[in-house]
Image (cartoon, rainbow, N blue to C red; front, side, top):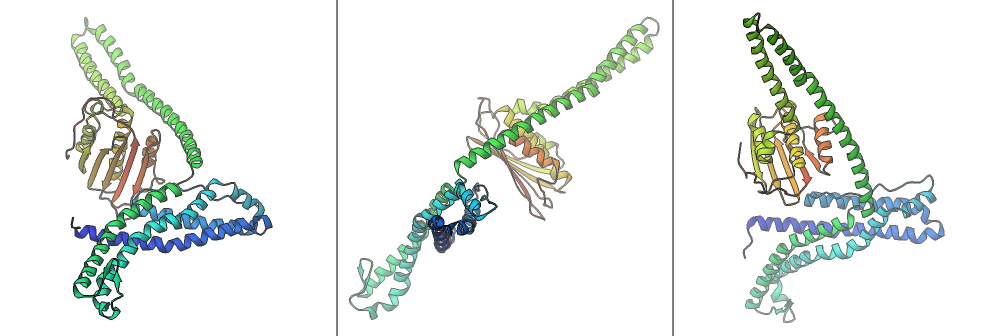
Length: 426
C-alpha cells in the first residue's frame, strides 16, 4: 500500500520525535544516576544534602516529559503532588523518601532509557541503515571490493547495487511507517508511568467530590431560594390579585355590570400573565423542549433564539441521555452563547455535540476577540460548577484575538430508548 504525502510528512515528524526522545533519554539517565547516587550516600549522611536537589532535577525532567506527551497526544497527564520540603536537609530528605510521587518518577527514570529508548531507536535505525543503502552504496560499492555486504546482499555488481538501493528505500519506508506506531506506544507508556500515583488520584478525587458536594448543596439551596422568590414575586402575587379582583367583580355583578365586566377582563389578563410566569419558571428549571425532543433539538432551539449565527452539529446516539446530564449541558451551552454575545463580540458560533458511549462531549467555538478566563467572571465559573456535579470538565482555549473554544466533557451513558434526532445545522 503506497503512503500518501500526508502520511510521509507525518512519518518524518514522528521520526523527528523519536530523535528527540532518544536524545532526551540521556537527560533522564543523568537525573536517574544523580538520584541513585544520592540514595546510596544517604547512610553516610551526605545523601541528605544531595537528595533534595537531585529529586528536584528529576521532577523537572519528568514534568518536561509530561508536558511533551500532552502536547504531542492532546491527552493531559495528571502530575503528582509537588515534592515536599523540610526545615532541614534531613527532614526534607525524609519527606521526599516518604513521597509516592518521588518513587513514581524514579521508577520511570529507570525504565524510560530501556523501554522508551528502544521504541525510539527502532525506526531511527531502520531509516539510518536504509539511507546508507539508498544514498551511500550506489557511490561507494566499487571501492569497497568483494567483501561489501549490505544486509544479506553482497554488493559486487550493478544489479546487486540496485538491489541494495531498493532494499534501502524499503527500510526507509518501513522506518517512516513504524515511527508513528512507536511514538504512540511511547505515549501510552509515558501516560502509564508518569501519571500521578493511584493514591494521589484517589485523594484528589475524594477532595474534589467533597468540594463538588458542598457546591451542589449551595447551588441547590440557591435554586430553591430563587424559585421561592420568583413564585412569591410573580405567579403568587398575580394569583392573589386575581382572587381579589374576582371578589370585587362578583360583588359588583348586581349593581354595576359594566364595571364587573371590566374587572373580569382584568382577571383574564392577570391569569395569562401568571401562566406565563409559571412557564418561564419551569423553563428555567427544565426546558420543555429538552424533555420532549432531547438535547440536540434543545440546543438547536437555543441557536434559533440567539441573534448570533449559530451552527449546530449533533452526532448523538438514538437513546436518550440522562435528564440531569442533558440539562447541565443545555444550560452550559446557553451560558456560553450568552458570554459569546455579551463579552466576546462574536458574530458566529459553532456547536458540536458527540457521544462515544460513555462520555458526552460538547464543543462551543466563537469568532470573538478571545481572552476569556474562567477565573475572571461568574458565568464560566457557574458552568464549571454545574459540570463538577457530574465529575465533568471544562477546557477553555481563548488566546487574545480569538477564537475561543470551550470543550465540555461529562461522563454518562445513554439511557431511555426514546429517540433523539441526529445532526443538522441551525
